[in-house]
Length: 196
Image 1 (tube, rainbow, N blue to C red):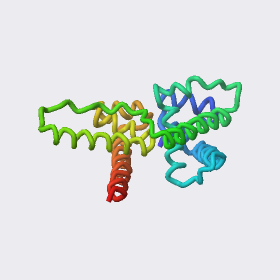
Image 2: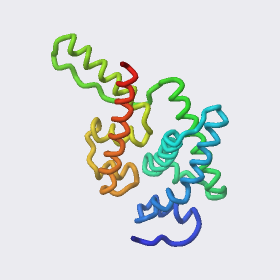
Image 3: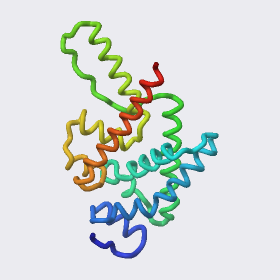
Image 4: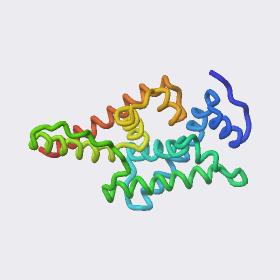
């Protein structure tokens, strides 16, 4: 495993932007505890008892926010200020978005519609219901999981492209996609049980 140069957060951030081996993993290792602590405080301050799954979702969404758009948030960081403060602000923002989505049921997804195939209207209505359930259930998983599923199944992007989006190695995409599918499946099964 490649070693990273010792030094400041600025050095680590630049290494992440450049895609240096081990840089992203080190950033995740270094800042996960802070993000989880901020997420926990944010949920409690809004009267929501934090649970592991919600905290993990917020943490994943925060890291996804940093890699999104070719590390745009990392590129915008002003090193005159503490990076811990910057990470805390992003984590609080993601916690707020997480709670707003949960309360409002609003979707920030753009799941493509499957074109009509000229089926019987009753069959098309049933398929429409299934699409609605899928769209609603996708909203219940983390932003990172949604992105992986959406890009792979609806955006028809390959592992290399998804890896570039997320700032991870292509070899990690398969495992990430599997975990995302498992979490989606668990939520779908929970919805099915609740409907009976």
